[in-house]
Image 1 (cartoon, helix red, strand yellow):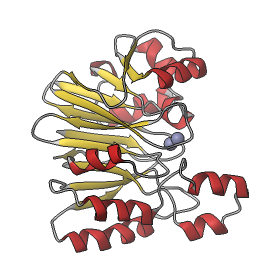
Image 2 (cartoon, rainbow, N blue to C red):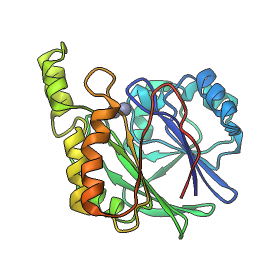
Image 3 (spheres, protein in one colour):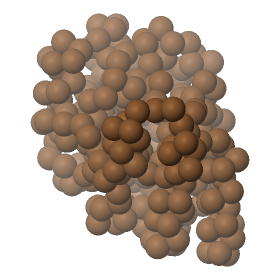
Length: 257
Ligand SMILES: [Zn+2]
Ligand SMILES: [Zn+2]
């Protein structure tokens, strides 16, 4: 499989994964113009996707949809029912939806898609496992705490995009309101660097070759802190795992796994 992450963080999220002829997108969290610019820079055609999958209804994951759907109405939109409803209300896009049940597995082209619940303060958030039979991509961001479904999907991944949102000390000492700090650190908020590291240590995914740290907070984290926490775990696991951080402003390199 091939993966390109167009950007990751609280200002916008979008990625493309390909297996053979099947191209899928996850989230549409940039303006359509910005997403087009980033896709063009990476040689990805926006109208070539067999599906655009949504994790949840926060604006950093769906704010570009209204214009994207107007320009590329042939790209089917996938979400569970509650998320599709919430995004319809938010963006006015009420056609083109293909609604699935969380945790069911279904094929789109070459890729088997499975979703899992992700505890987060949105309508009905999910993460995904995209599996083409040889490789599997785990997408898990925007979650306050890992669940059984999260662990099960991560255990099957050959490449994982995992949230390492904040450093607890930087979060507590930041000038954010107490209520927001509690939301971010709570069970329906975001994983900290330590939470992400603990999850990888606990699951010890046997096939994992590439681990990409995602949704890193600009003000309450730093890439080197997220990397430092995870490097220690990767060293403990004792297997060659490529570790990288995803950026908000710059598309990732092309990952093949
Ligand atoms: Zn987000
Ligand atoms: Zn969110």
